[in-house]
Image (cartoon, rainbow, N blue to C red; front, top):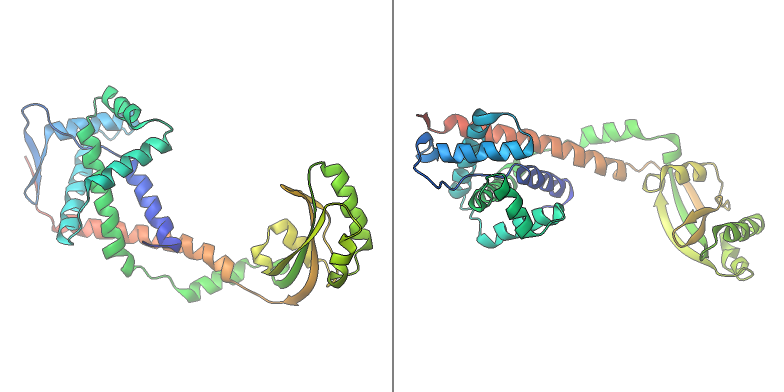
Length: 299
């Protein structure tokens, strides 16, 4: 499976397609309205999709429903060409995930769709197309996406603030337990006596429930903005003001501090954004090209 921005991009595609579920299982005599590479799309399917659109608040009507069904026929055909299959187990898992996201049971989800006139087979067919297209995206489209490291470096460098240009070795001094006001008083007392990292543990012995933790090396870009700004104003041997955290009251002591610009963490976020945008564009182009080459006959 993909990771990094690929993982995020796949997740975005899955969420999007699952929010547009629906493809009909006809229950009465039908007329074929469109043929896509020989695959028929009936008036019953279109009517079902319009009902689903009504549930979603989509007002594109029959035209939008028809276009969506055409896209799904093309997506399934491309998946078949690439040897991609979707199992019933995958569809069942997707159904269960949708129900969890909506905080309802699977049976309740089915009931809600049926109340809107959307049958269970409609949902399963729609999910089959969604899962198949996700696999096409991962297998055939992702390898084409390129993100320029040079551009990322330039963008990251432009975003770095002065306080983000330091590399630290830190220790955390934490006063553990409830009662933040009392713990803060102890922390301030400790802070007034602090004489550097070498004596941090010995100093803590004179306080109740105080612990010294080796945080290790951290670059400023890895730290919350408020802490990074405070640390930038401290020299080696300095210690931050007490902060209430989930486990008590915490302070950070500066054991080493050097000027060092590290764009890794800023680039990571930029890469995710750039990758998602590039992938979205490639997916749109790929589907548009498939549609241009498809034999679509309207009746």
